[in-house]
Amino acid sequence: MTSQAADGPETVVASRRSKITPEREREFFDAVLEQIRECGYDSVTMEGVAASTRCSKSTLYRQWKTKPQFVAAALRASRRVRFAGIDTGSLAEDLRQAARAAGDWSGKDTRLLQALGHAVTSDQELAEALRDALVHPEIAALEEMLARGVARGEVRAGHPALEYIPAMMFGVLRVRPVLNGQYADSDYLVRFVEAAVLPSLGLR
Amino acid sequence: MTSQAADGPETVVASRRSKITPEREREFFDAVLEQIRECGYDSVTMEGVAASTRCSKSTLYRQWKTKPQFVAAALRASRRVRFAGIDTGSLAEDLRQAARAAGDWSGKDTRLLQALGHAVTSDQELAEALRDALVHPEIAALEEMLARGVARGEVRAGHPALEYIPAMMFGVLRVRPVLNGQYADSDYLVRFVEAAVLPSLGLR
DNA sequence: GTGTACCGGTACTCGACCGTATCGGTACAC
DNA sequence: GTGTACCGATACGGTCGAGTACCGGTACAC
Image 1 (cartoon, rainbow over the protein chains, first blue to last red):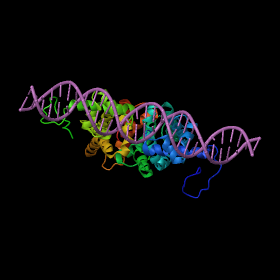
Image 2: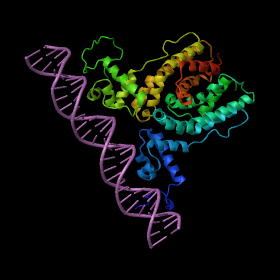
Image 3: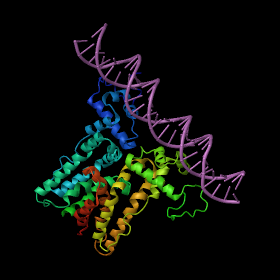
Image 4: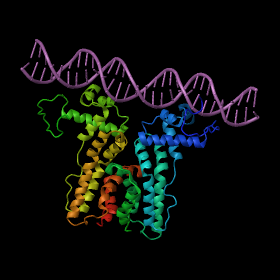
């Protein structure tokens, strides 16, 4: 009775789970972030996460003292740069590719940002974790693209639109659900880059 | 369902079921929206609203059946168009003035949108009320401006950037707090219009 | 004065969740 | 085999908020 209770496939009891492995931790983190996306930060419960990962509340509380600390840890662990590796040698093409990449994860990340957007106003640690996980890395990557474009002479240094490009990209990504009722997909974002971002920089 | 929102200072009420005057109702609505901005939708309680307006929970529940219905009513009653009356005869100037106007209420509305952003994903009525109160009127006003500009020949009909202007304006407004840690003020928005919006339309 | 209908206050039920405590079971070290 | 340390399950206490019920008070109609 102690092992899993009638779980899906025939995945044999992996048998070495006397301590929380990094893979197991990853399961907890994935579960809590997914539940935040679906139900919002306030509605996520430690009990729910425990149930969906078939662990016990005690296990979670043994590792993390409180719910916000647990969520912050999950965010920090999920940090990764989606724009990494984009460097085509042309700023316009870099931006198009970034838009295409952004479209692929826009639903997930937009939901997470939205769901946590207000919770972070009352928890400093959470705010920092969210920024480090979802915002700063992408911003930095975008700014690198722009800097390379400037260095290549595609855009003159100090062009007034440069400062606003990250806000435009993130902004459109973020508000599309509210305006049009659907998440921004790659197609929409690429067209946005071509119709507005590039022209504002004097590119095409 | 009560009376119209547009009645005068003196109540000429014929046969109201409720003794709640429109002014009193307005107090309830202002209170709940303010508390939502401060604490988030989930954290707002009917008890808190009752306490801050010195009425009783019973009074609130007599008028509105549930918390989401109460909030939706508050949103609908708060509907107003901030861009109304902007018509300078020049699209560029219209957009600058819209940016200036937007900066004045950006903090309040951005907080409200943020605080409700996730709650609306699980309540259809709330979502509709939020859109009707804060989003659609402004979008419509912006689109009118753009249409006038097209009619005057300042921008050619079908210009690809036209479709994205509202999303750009709202998006930048919305994400500035996340990117820069402060709400978008008039100055920031006007510079954004000049640096990015107008160039993308081929204006200056 | 009398009736009516609503108000504000309070007390209540009911359910949900946080965080803790306890207990049996088991992988691993030696 | 024995000990240790952690796992999962479960039960519990405490808090909080939604929504309901009931109360006395009062403005107003007639």
